Image (tube, rainbow, N blue to C red; front, side, top):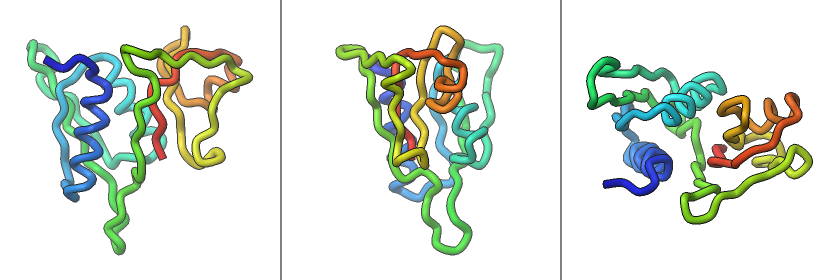
Length: 133
């Protein structure tokens, strides 16, 4: 049993990138699906597919994105910020900037999961889930 499913998600992605895998399969949940959609929208992954939508054992297949010549991953760092034992909440004034705006922070707000830039523009704070650069 996994006590922190988001940390498990990030670790599976990190391990797949380190092993230069093209595709990684991760057990699905609503928040993992939303994180995957954000990663796709921001260009960190090539594609994704939700499998077994109707059954109990849902999964997400994620096609990782690499540079065609240098084979360097689009994702250089995945860092879990808020954990079940220590939640990290920020106001809109204290919203973090990852790599001075080059990376993204995924924030869980009252308006749903979004990036730090979207949260700043909507003037909402929330729980900082992770940093991606």
